[in-house]
Length: 241
Image (cartoon, rainbow, N blue to C red; front, side, top):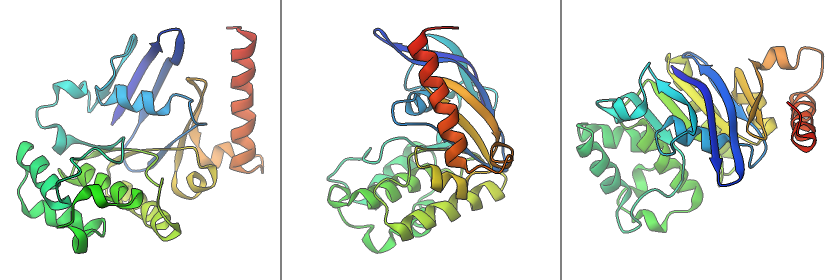
């Protein structure tokens, strides 16, 4: 489970995230939906301990990420596609992560097979396309078989078959009882993948609800999304509280 309470983050004079509170529970895909620049990536970085909030806190299974004893076994994340040494092979990259996390080498081959990279496992990762790099990042997230998973825009660079594969993978991971937080700005794909939605705009939480509830009046998810985010833009422009 992921918990965020009062998360706030500024970069200079820019307020990236403002008093953000939510919970992400196991057993469903929670979509983190918002326009580009809305604060999704910043929030995920704060959950993973990569950015320090100016206020508030985030926990995974009741503890800050930095206090987890075996983080790879408890939390897996894909926040950037190309977080690997370009001269290493895909297998070597994962093997190094596994060794550092106390994970057996057999798991490396298992996740390479899961993401469809077995046939190119010996190639230098620097030669990979963006879509292949995304798959390698997903393999790294799955390496420790963690109960909590975060994916930031994982369909970037994937062809339609790859997008469908991501959708099925996310839903299968949630069906296993894992906590899955999936960010995207692609409304149509989120409508097909997520069970629950956190909608963010201008760094503020606009909705924390199921897809069914958000679209219950008979409107499309796209209509509901634009209604919510246009209101957030008005809030910022007016400067009211």
